[in-house]
Length: 149
Ligand SMILES: [Zn+2]
Image (cartoon, rainbow, N blue to C red; front, side, top):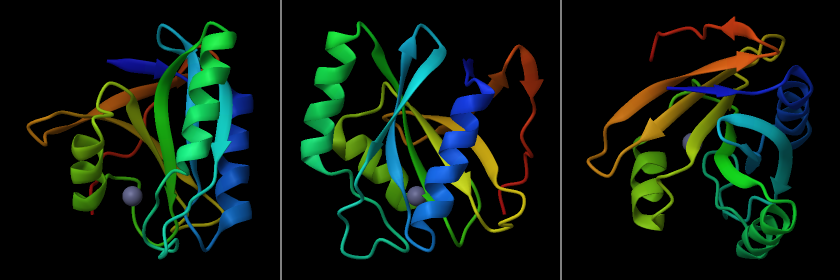
C-alpha cells in the first residue's frame, strides 16, 4: 500500500507542525485514489495538546463539506508528535478505532529532530494492527526510516 504526497504538501505538513510546536498539530489530507491534492488544517482542541490531539468537530464538518464540494476523498488524517517518533501511540490506535475513522491513513510528523522532521504513514486496522504505508512524492520513492523506537 502507498500514498502519494506531493512535495508542496509535505512542506505544508512540516510547516504546520513547526508553527504549532510544542503542541501537536492535526488535520486532513484529501485527494483522489491514493494521491493527495489538498491539506486541510484542523484545530487541536485536546486539553493536553503537547502530547495528545483531538480534531475540532467543526473542522471535521468543514473538511467533509470541502471534500464533497471538490469531489475529493479524505485520504488521511495527520498529526504531529513533538516529543516522540512518527509512529502511532497506543492512544492514537485506540482513538482511531473508537472514532470509526479507520479507512483513512494516519500520517505522522515527528519533530524529535527539528531540523529533520520525519513523516511516516500507517494503516490502522480494527484489530489494532498497524501497517506502514509507503509515501511517494513527485514520483520518487520516499523510504521512511523503519525503526519504531
Ligand atoms: Zn499521536
